[in-house]
Image 1 (cartoon, one colour):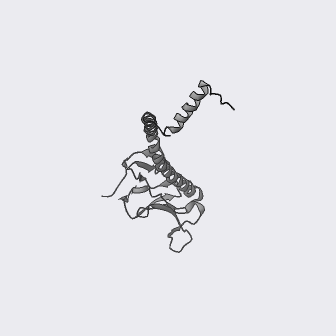
Image 2: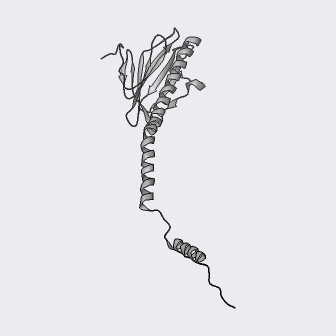
Length: 195
């Protein structure tokens, strides 16, 4: 049997496929440079948003505290109660206490209702300091602001700070009970603070 020679086009294809098989699989330097450039560009664009996530946690805790203070103001006024929001700066949390009007010697007792449960701040956010009019500013220990049944609250300023040093200021209005959340470190204005 006679062997017929292969056509030239078929020989060229088979030698090209053998050459492609022998080349090492991998990326060229140019391809790697393009991928690194694209990743760097994406990281540069994403960095401001990552900072926003960190700030979002601080804002979330500020809103949570503001909501609790507004609720306590409404609760004290609506049910004619004397309530206290107690800040435990050393343990980075706050809780609610209620004056027991039926006790022989009225004292504040922990509020065991769902709205009175203690709140612990996340580890990345801390209560930096609390200023209560007539008491002063504390950055350790415990300090309380009182909500009265007549419809007012002790003028109070709370500073919350995150791990990167960003600060949110909460300011409780004594007459309306409204809580202003201010981005940044704002010092109390017009408050009587003992020396």
